Length: 341
Image (tube, rainbow, N blue to C red; front, side):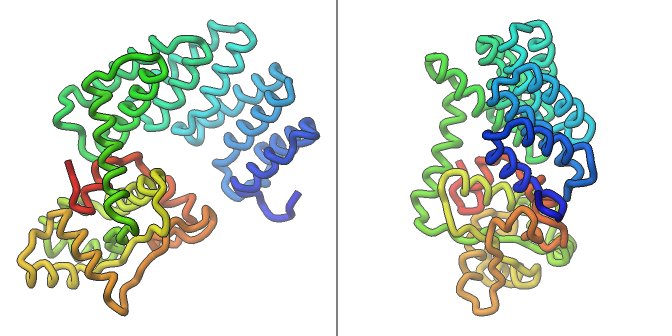
């Protein structure tokens, strides 16, 4: 056991290496969750979830259920978007034959579908444990209808867009596993996937994503409200978009990803000289490409380590900053490269 406080990576390594002595590993993970051993106290639910995983793998289902219940309760208290303990508990209860409690937990996941982008995958995994795929499919469709009744006008980022994308993808995968033919929503999900794949195929080496550090973003917002069309209206929204774009490209196999720091004055001078629209995402992509050829360009490699300083310059650790801002995006990835649908 390391003398320093445990990170999420430490907890994962402890669980992965503890199968030969499950009892000791469970005890260590539980002690970490209960004591002052965690670098980030919000990892306590994660530690208990890992302990439940170890108990399940060791065949100790009853103990796993107890640990999963504790992990779920703690997640509800300190990290409501962390829904893995809920799906784990459904699976464990189903294995024990306790369908009533399992269904009650499944209903809680249903209630989270329009609130957390982690809920769709957690729900589908849990529903499979109960052979309730058809019910899960209905719930996913209802949630999409609630957030995006008009599929041609999806919600804006940070207003439900990210959740709709996750709902569409989870629904698509579930229907495919059930052998159902594609419908209009499946085709929409495919178009988003295709747009990402096309963007990656057309660029052997991804250009850095344009990023305005906080001071420069504030200056840009003062000088050009039109530019906020592609950046987002707040710095938090802007860095969330950049994080999400980079994560989406990483998810489809892109490597050597980076952001490139821009100044408000430099960007607006470029826009004026080239007579371009400052709010056009294609302009942002063109400027990012132009910046890569400048000797003093600041290219920010992505991603940093979880416990390293965040790439956005906030001074916080990555896992406590932009990693938590990450949203599952599709459209905005192609937007910054001028390939929006």
